[in-house]
Image (cartoon, rainbow, N blue to C red; front, side):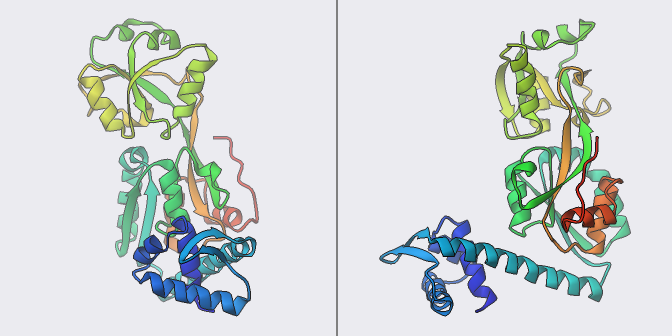
Length: 314
């Protein structure tokens, strides 16, 4: 049995049983993958996949268990490499963070700058995507961890570490009638075209829930995955915007005005998602603690290795 055979199993399952796509991902040939899987099945004495001619059509019941074990073995093999690298050179290496645009653009810059000054030999990478995508990146080993507000809780293989709570504001062009209103209400927002986040992003579910609870249906004329895009179209006069308060900077966004809306919507919590039982290098713990000071190395270790539960009221 070889680790490469286990990688083949995991990639075939990950690509919907498409051997051609798995071969491309692994930089090998489809016949080579088929041969190695057959050798593994012969060694184990069970069929892992159901075949129709040369096509793989399903995973057998024992195959499902074997693929899950293969995933864990590959995960631990990566932990071995990380542990060796940690002892070889504590202050150099690579840190890849998967996150959404809002976090990358507004929450992370100061932390990245501070981290880079402390660890100048660590190559830092930011991979952006939707909340679901960034969780997948962390699970597939393309990132050390992910940062997002939505979706992390739906991935059981990720440990959810709460970082900070935040809320929203409503943005308008200067001179908008809402700016004259003493108290902002959902009813007054519903009177205007609304530009906000795509449903998968940045607490959109809390926005929808607030309006639905009051029996209102906002006129959402445009959605985006990017706070800067929302601000651009509000400035053009297409509507008012609902976005994360952290994404509005009065010194920069001089062509817009913001109205606090935290009394209208439930707060959202941004989390870090770390694969269960992951081996984290020392500088990874330091980055996490810089981003969320309550997440010390002991706290993170206890959660990632199932020694404790994290339950903070943020």
